[in-house]
Length: 554
Image: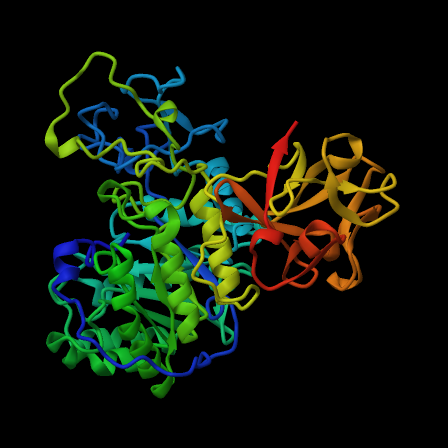
């Protein structure tokens, strides 16, 4: 992630004064494209395992303090361990003890085509349309270009768009070296801007410049930064300006106003600014004013959205991130920048992470871990709530749907920390309202109704994966799919030989271990109508007692 806005102390010093919230949602200055109206995943892609093919002879870069030695209990620089179960290649043994489940403590390298393909597929499957390729000062090293090539190669099969995100941190010669890198490497060597999968906005290739206005991170001036932005625009680019949270009102930001106005999109940094629900809510007015400024200046606005630093217990099992999504939707923001996909170093990753001690290194010998390393083996259950390893990707998918208006605004997080409806399993549904099981009555010939005291074939359903975290239900009564018939206007019935939109549902967390089902046919919740006396129908905008079910797995 960008170094310049990393530290909470820096960001905390930039907390804004209260300001008036824009009373009406405002539309983006540009029409939807590959960044406007989309979720973009910030991707580091810079982890290496001292493998023979690592670029620049890299060691355990970003995994270890001493990069020449493999990670150990005293030499691991990240906040938590990735979930290693999905990987079949590109993994390497560390010096850490085995996981709690007895499996060896391995890590992945980012410089492996299979690993990169897996990551991009996860992004696409969870609502992220575009990936921002972090590119720090690349002069004299090959790692950033190798990374960019791997993403470029993997993007078509994954259906992902991508763009270069330059970070000016510590890059004092960016004024000349960045244009040279763009021309010689990105354009002439990799031919990225003309690639079909390179992100375009308003018909122009997208490029980001992080650190505009941050004179403490590099030796840029208002004049040199403005010249850079204008040069990129002269090359036909759509330019995103990555800026500090205080970009609009900080006294040291005022000389850079012309730089910000020259950008096509503004993207303020939020890590270190929000860390609990109260700070998310107090930040809402600043975001509304950011959006208003952008609208009045003809600039698009994209806000950073983060899961929270796991090492300092910010996540609240997803409630922090959901509050961010809800606040942004409430003020009319439609574009989000997920920070970040793979930032294990600072604990803000959304990609699959160790769920509990069974998936993280143990300490059987009682090795004394230095205080500096004490917060480096956190798991997703750190606050007492068990979360599946993919939970924050699923939550991101739901948040993106809400930003884009595909589901209604709600401050109640719908994403279950652990899915009850797992594809491939056979389940039954017990209606909370009357404790009766849902039945595909008359061998599926009649509509579904919650009126059975026990479970047989008519009360069982096979969960089928429909992509994007959606599912279909195949009734064991007749081997046909359950449909929210007539676009949801009629009762649910198991009478379809194939699954489409009317047969697709999304599992929502209804609390107390129960679920609610939202039908994609009409975006309404399935209801055991009339306290269960009537057939199930998808016609409720919210869920309560009649719309919640206990899932039993067989």
